[in-house]
Amino acid sequence: MHLAVLGATGAVGRTMLAVLAERGLAVDRLTLLASERSAGERVQWGGREWTVEVPRPGVFRGVDYALFSAGATRSREWGPVAAEEGAVVVDNSSAFRMDPDVPLVVPEVNLAAARDRPRGIIANPNCSTIQVVVALQALHRAGGLRRVLATTYQSVSGAGETGRSTLRRENAGEGLTLPRVAQPVEGSPFARRIAGNVIPQIGDFDDEGWTGEERKIMEETRKILGLPGLAVAATCVRVPVEVGHSVQVMVETERELSAEAARRAMALFPGILLQGGPEAYPTPWEAAGRDPVFVGRIRKDPEVPNTLHFWVVADNLRKGAATNAVQIVQGLRGG
Ligand SMILES: NC(=O)c1ccc[n+]([C@@H]2O[C@H](COP(=O)([O-])OP(=O)(O)OC[C@H]3O[C@@H](n4cnc5c(N)ncnc54)[C@H](OP(=O)(O)O)[C@@H]3O)[C@@H](O)[C@H]2O)c1
Image (cartoon, rainbow, N blue to C red):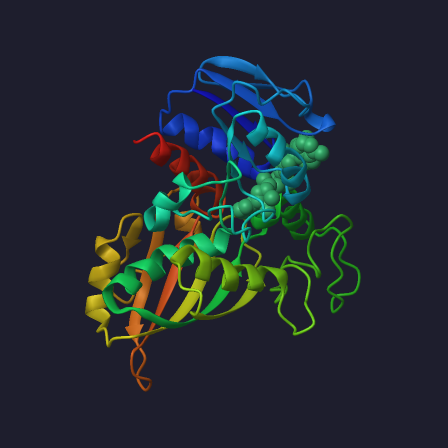
């Protein structure tokens, strides 16, 4: 198989190369693409050395799958080109996610949708959405979904390499002038200082006060689950964690589900690793570097009928991006 990775030098791109190697996909040719900044860089993969190139017309000819993780602008520019040149594009950006002609795929939930791709493009959902919908689908099958409320605690690597380096620089004391002014360091992708802080803003605010990230979770969840009428609301928060997103979810089901029935449904669902018992909950530190969606703290609401609460954690660079994309390729190739 000939595989291209656009954004190969970034946080997600490098994780893709690691996941591809771990899963032993039969890749005999790699085309690694990034910006001018990285052109000429050499990367060891599969016992060979590959040179990073800048994308140009014709570069996707002969490519079977093109995995994109270079941001929405680059995806809009190169996605249609790669598809036209014959590659199946799996895009990690937000560029095509809500396009009705582009399937939005989480293999454990709706792999079949990836086979119907009129534009030759498959979209990988937003990182927080992926881990939430895996858990939601388990409950949907068991009791039907009526309403979802999600509050996220998202790591800085969700904003790429710059997010990670910003936290490290601020932790090292850079940019700290007045103790009570949360001014971020220069070049930070965050609206406030992130070290020692939490920021209830990921993306820009719309006229109704929702952020871009919150809208993504709300809209993408409905599309992936195929439930256009599902009530979903989200609050997205950036926290000073390097890798791993955590989400607290409240869900109202159509039918009454005991906590035990919900635990059973989660435990049996592919891709979920359930932590049992009130003290055995997952944290991002433990989820980082691993592929499953970790679920814990499943409990019934003490007052409101048909309502459950749970905690879900996953590595945003892996299941939230690279692993999900590689699973789509594996699923389409039948293994
Ligand atoms: N981080 C996450 O948890 C996560 C999760 C899901 C989806 N995503 C999405 O994945 C994409 C990449 O995220 P990331 O976190 O990996 O970002 P990143 O660490 O900033 O990496 C960006 C990559 O894009 C390349 N790039 C930038 N400008 C380019 C250009 N003009 N032409 C070609 N390549 C270019 C960069 O190359 P250079 O190294 O040469 O600059 C780098 O390889 C984004 O769309 C993001 O929304 C990220």
